[in-house]
Image (tube, rainbow, N blue to C red; front, side, top):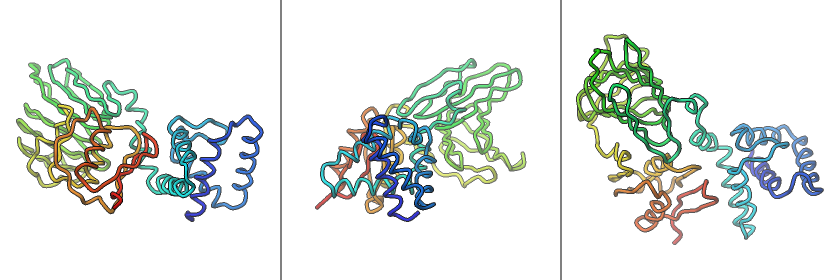
Length: 327
């Protein structure tokens, strides 16, 4: 997509947010927008991209945009100086045409997670106790289905991250945790499972867990012992590495970092707050250490400014960029 076309499409988004669709000026702007769309196929593709990022988020020309889209557009429009406004529009264009899909994927929960037996929203954490005494702690934006029957006890991890402490079941039914990549069978244990984009991560803190990727023969299961962690795909299992108790600090409402790359730290923090939290590549390699309370993510961002050469730029409360500090 030509950058000039992408920026113009974003300008139209901003302009349409500044007019009432029912007044004369609003009608004129929408007519002008339609004329622009008809001038070149790239114009149509640019606007389709904006709509495709999430039709529910931005709507179409006949619908009112959602509060998040309106907030972004109005914030861009309200930027006082023309230079700053141009910079804001350029940044929004980059987000929509380069990183928008990731932002939407972060904020939108698939329909099957909305209908899950147990789930949490962004920034929420909770613990549930199952019929056999098993406790399951759900991290932010997590969802599970619980399927207990006469033959087995099963948890299906639909998304997010859980910490499981298995209960004792006198019937001898196996306990299974299913992820998108395969199955886990704990052997009297306490362990964490995180559903990532293309793999599942497992950390074992007590006991052991048998890992069975979906496309590997049954005899190829790996036994992961206490103090170990690994990731697995449909057909592979990575070599075990030492587990780190800091990875489940979220159960106490904390985020613990030990010389963590700033980009990785912000990606983790972004899971606990709505909207988009980005990192300028120029500072992605800075290192972060410390213990941070997740109850106040704004305070964590401000703490970064006090310890690192960075500035926090809020276009809206839903769209935040961490950039190099100005000298």
